[in-house]
Image 1 (spheres, rainbow, N blue to C red):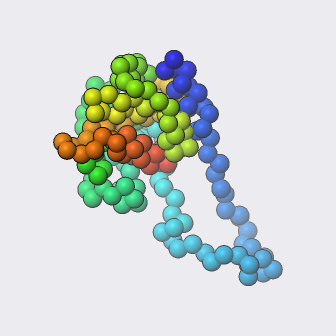
Image 2 (cartoon, rainbow, N blue to C red):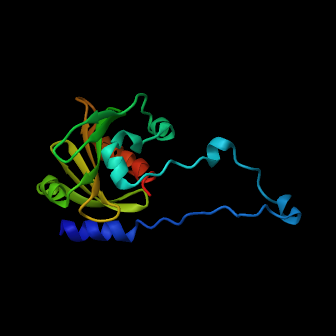
Image 3 (cartoon, rainbow, N blue to C red):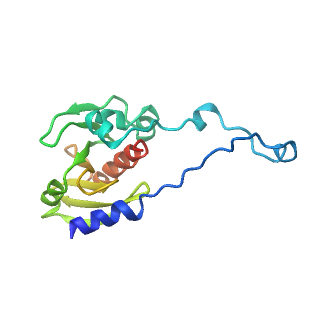
Length: 179
């Protein structure tokens, strides 16, 4: 069931419609009605990487804009794991670890005994599993053999109800950097 959900999640909501700026400047007839030009920072687009590039350097998955938007004050901490490197941040009392190349077999193990739901993460649908105050989120971007996943564990005394949203926010921000 997990494979079907992840495959559907990877294919159903993952299509983003890119807006391409016009190659020619607006004509004088329409320029007066056009809105003011956005500031350089508003027009900046996130850096894009392949999923494999981010998997080998997971702390690149959140840029300065993402860190500020999520309220993260320091850089991510690179971690080593059985399935390759991950990067960890503290998001409002929630310890979120992000990995960008997790196998489906790992997702099956981590979701086996949890309360499983399908949730939106950015433009994608994801599988979320909660148990023992831990929240796992898995997103299939291109295929189910290379999942983006977060593991979120709250600090002692932090509320459980913000655990999964913190992981989903980190995953959503990271997905904006995958081409």
